[in-house]
Amino acid sequence: MDTQLLYPVGIQDFPRIREREMVYIDKTALVYRLANEGECYFLSRPRRFGKSLLISTLEAYFQGRKELFHGLAIERLEKDWTEHPVLRLDMSRDKYATTANLLSMLDGMLSFYECQYDITPPNGSSPGTRLNRLIETAHKQTGKPVVVLVDEYDAPMLDSQGNPALQAEIRNIVRGFYSPLKAQAARLRFVFLTGITKFSQLSIFSELNNLRNISMLPQYEALCGITAEEMVTQMRPGIECLAEHHGCTFDEMVERLKMNYDGYHFGRRLVDVYNPFSLVNVLQDSELGQYWFASGTPTWLLELLGGKDIELDELEHIEAPASRFDQPTEQVDDPIPVLYQSGYLTIKDYDPDSELYTLGIPNREVRIGLGDSLVKYVKARPGSNDYLRKVYFQLRRGTATLADFMAKLKDFYSAIPYDVANDNERHYQAILYAVLASFGTDVRVEERTAAGRADLVLLMPQEIYVMELKYGHTVQEAMEQLRARDYAAKWRHDGSPVRLLAINISKETRTVDDWACKPGIYIHGGTKVVK
Image 1 (cartoon, rainbow, N blue to C red):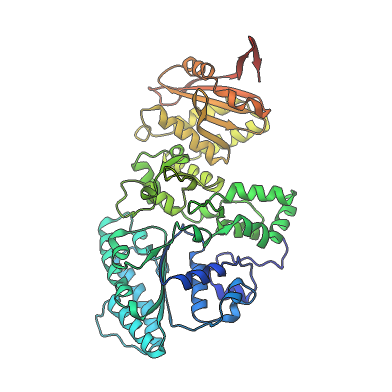
Image 2 (spheres, one colour):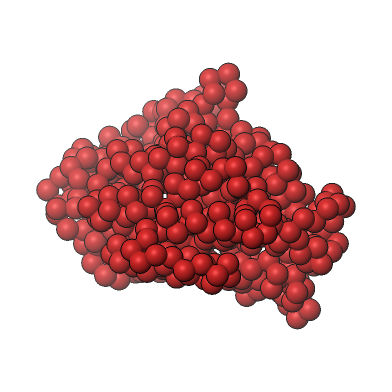
């Protein structure tokens, strides 16, 4: 890698990035538009998507630090560079196991700014009362309206997601803390809140009636993250170095990056957005790893999926109006809003006639991570999936047989505790999908064909497996369905051999009791054709 390229891995501080001449994707034209077409905003984006860097950029802009923006788009747009008092409140700076944690964190943030404006709060003052006085004092001392930037406003509620009683207490404290943002509207120049999810009971979205939710507005789809165009232009030198390191062309590397980290869309324009955290780490490390998923998936999210009986394969194609996935999440009757707002699902398509969005898993990185996490969640015997993974890649290389893989699959199903296994075919289909997805394979679920839907289709480099799973039936029935409906027809033009794989799961043993694999045979002009 070119050592002259410095990537801001884990750095969300705009001044530090600019002063050290690190790679920075220029979002300042959108920052200027944001700052000058409105005054009070909310933006939802997944974790590690650049929200903190956006907050830091807004802070520097409103502080009038013109020198930091030299050579950026905003330098041509802004003429005045007016300095405003800025209160930046980062709610993600602590973990909130108790209300005392929250109160201590708020006290620390408020004390920092109270020292700046020579304020001594009365004993026992609530955080909301102190913030109210801070705004009044900053406005009076500077003669300028105040800017309030709140980063990860929902962090305290997310930390207490698994404890409803604690979350209720925390929500009441936070509601009171944010209340001055409406009461002091006349003294405020700009208010900007970021977060992952929407919590309606905070009353932010009802009390702050001028708070504009820009999370899905077309003009701000690219406000966070890195677009495909930005990547191939502003990050081209780094990608060229990465391609050279991996022995491929620039275009081939772009395709690899797209498959692994692209796929996010935050509005109906479907602007392609790459995960910035993963992309920067890839260019820094020269390795295409699972960076975003590895940085932390909350246990409560996996428990939510398990508790709602949502299988991984069900997340690949969900049609829904925006009201289903862009809604408050403090009462989780439907996991889809949490999964979308957290970044595990994204918009894949939009139909303007029906106003329905199609949601799905964004990319290979998330699919591998979710698959691996959900496989672990079914509590199979430790290591059983590792053996299956090893044999799968041996099968790909031709050093193991399909029989070897099926034997390990049988062992894997046998390792799932009886109280986790469900008494239906879909459960076993979904587990096999999660297992294959965790290997990074190109596996399709409920793949549509002219005659119906194939349970699973596994596209390997040298061959394609079209699968049908049965539960408590026979492998002959599964094979007959594959042949009668000719699920394989869709794949015969690909040039790779097509195999029909029939699997039956025993009701008694809850594992594979029989399987069969045949060539994808079909009738053409009265002649059998094998491929």
